[in-house]
Image (cartoon, rainbow, N blue to C red):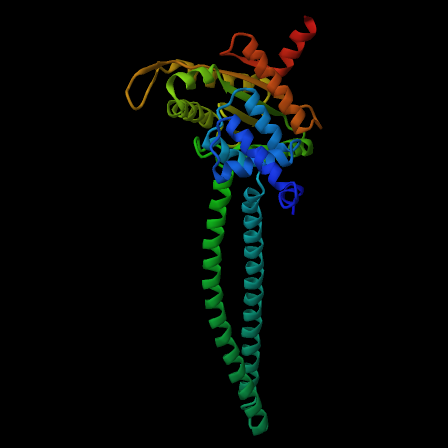
Length: 353
């Protein structure tokens, strides 16, 4: 049991629950079961990853919607991590069954060869000089071997049926895993999946020496747009931007909704020049489209995005790379928005100043 779960089962739990309700009321968050779980974790572990992320979202004025609560739960609550454990268990079960199937297949081959050997021996004993008793023994052994082969065939059929069922279960578990790592609004990867992929990509580049770039993108003035047109229209805009990012960020690249109106992209084996061109392609496409409100067909005008990226240094930790990409994004914001900045260029500008 985690420290948070322990705290929520102790004498201080009621005080923490009251504090959680006070915070939800202050931030105008409905006291649903999911929100209550999130905010009690926030109170119980104010230095934890969930609390830090929630504090960051509040500080930038991110609307605390139900969708955001679902994303936070998927990324940080213990129940969400259960999906990964289920997937791992399913994979182990499949491997075990594959090993069993192979063992039985080998046993069948051995038994078949044994049966042929015994049958040959029975034919040899047909010679007059062989004793009748020996023929009887060998014939009996042959019958016994055939019986084993028949039983093995039945077992093979049952195993095939079991394997088909396990394959179905594994497919279901894989779908659960995909759902747990996919953002519900945009169908891009979610924050949890992004964090895992970034750690994996960093480890891989340390092994093979390839280049790696990380980009962070943000919709400009999105809060004002949301306040003017409402969250549903804001969600339309997020989905549109995600569709552009997702097209450019198809594998082997990796695109994710990082939170709210912010996105992140991983570019393995691509250098700063290539990444700059790709991010400019995204920026220009987003800015070129005149948006309309789906429900009323009203003109919404155009939107823009700002982007920043960093090229990873060998051995650099993922959080350090993320911080440099974030700094480049803020440089784009300070520079007038609707632009792409690199961490290296931003650092050179700062040093020159």
